Length: 190
Ligand code: HEC
Image (cartoon, rainbow, N blue to C red; front, side, top):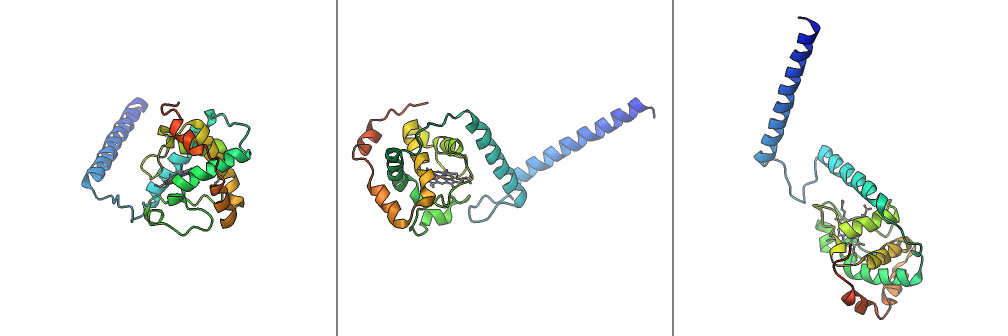
C-alpha cells in the first residue's frame, strides 16, 4: 500500500467509528436508561459536562455586562434585601433560616448565597437576569428591570457580612415606595 492509500484507509475507519459512536449515543438517549430523577445525582461525567458548560457560558456572556458604580449604596442594598427576602430566600436561604422543602428537593441544589459566591457582580447580574436552563433558577429579567436586578446584586455583596438579626432588620428597612416601584416598572426591558 502506498502512503495515500494508507491515509484513505484510516480516514474511512475514522468515519465509520464516528458514525458508530454517534449511533450508540442516540441509542443510549432513546433507551431511557439515563435517570433524570432529581433525587438521583448525575454521573460524574455528565455533571462535569453540565457544570463546565454553565461556568464557561456565564463567564463569557457576563463579559459584556457594564457594572454600575453604586453597588455599595445603602438604598440599593436595602431595596435588594427586600427583593431577596421575597423572591430568593425560599431556595437560596438566608442568615438564620432553616432549610425549606424546595431547597431540600432541588437538583442541582440552589447554593446558599450567605457565605458568598465565587462569581463577579457582572456574573451574578447575568445569572439573575437570564436564569440557568434546566435548573430551578428562573430568568428574573422577564419580570424585573435592570435597576432592580442590580439592587439584588448590591445586596448579595453585603449578605456575607450579615447576622440573622442584621439580615432581618435590612429586609424590613426596604424603602416604602419600593412595592410601588415594582408595580410601575416597565416589563419589556432589554
Ligand atoms: C426555585 C428556586 C430558586 C429561586 C426562587 C431562586 N433561585 Fe437562584 N438558583 C437556583 C438554583 C437551583 C441555582 C443553581 C443552578 C446551577 O447549579 O446551575 C441557582 C443559582 C443562582 C446563582 C448562582 C450561584 C452560584 O454560586 O453559582 C445566583 C447568584 C442566584 N441563583 C441568585 C438568585 C436570586 C437573586 C434569586 C431571587 C431573585 C434567586 N436566585 C431565586 C434556584 C433558585
